[in-house]
Image (cartoon, rainbow, N blue to C red; front, side, top):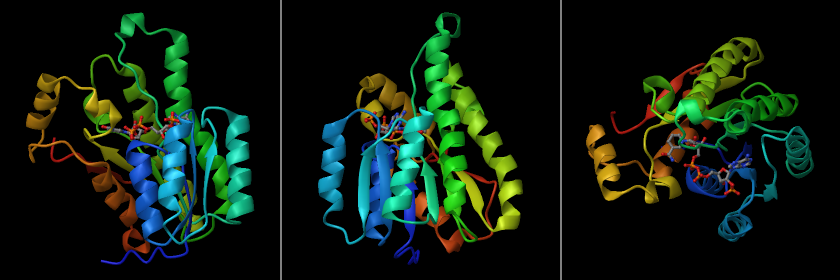
Length: 245
Ligand code: NDP
């Protein structure tokens, strides 16, 4: 099925590794022009730039921490300069850590909330003046927001916040013809999963109906659908991509 995304202008946050990287490459392969950002890992960013150079659109990979308002302003200036307008915005950049609630320091709470939730607020609010009717905003949330996970109160609170932001914003943006949806992945084979113990990885696999972890490309496929007019009657929705947890 063609998603008819050729020539669309897209911003993806956190595109240098994991799910974000798969999303950027999938969109570029569909013919989109993509601006993306990373926080610290320059090597991964350069690898992405090399991979993007084989695709046809105009692309830009910039360093910008989505939790810092001045960085987000710079990122959106780059979108304006490189692309002019935006058709699709994907807020993917995310932070996580595993800390018992009683030991969760305020700085760590703020780091995770600032990246996941305030980052979404900053990026989407900054991007909206560049968007018009037909636009689509997608936030990468998490299945964890729905079920709860020990040691991740800050992470799940931020991801549940993303859902609330998206649902209310869908009501504000609907009359302008702009949609916003959340993709909630289960456990996906990224760097974090590579660090799991074999027992832990097996426990996660048996939690899913399909008996395996997901691949970043399987999340990217759903992002393609939500980016495109194929999903034109969907807004304020959360799509679970979790192999049936
Ligand atoms: P990774 O840690 O593999 O990659 C994160 C990407 O985001 C990197 O490119 C990283 O850049 C960038 N990034 C991190 N923090 C910031 C920041 N403050 N500003 C800008 N860029 C940043 O993450 P995943 O691919 O695993 O996760 C992507 C999203 O999917 C996250 O929102 C996560 O919560 C969500 N998710 C992931 C699941 C999984 O199983 N992997 C499950 C459910 C949800 P750099 O390397 O330079 O820091």
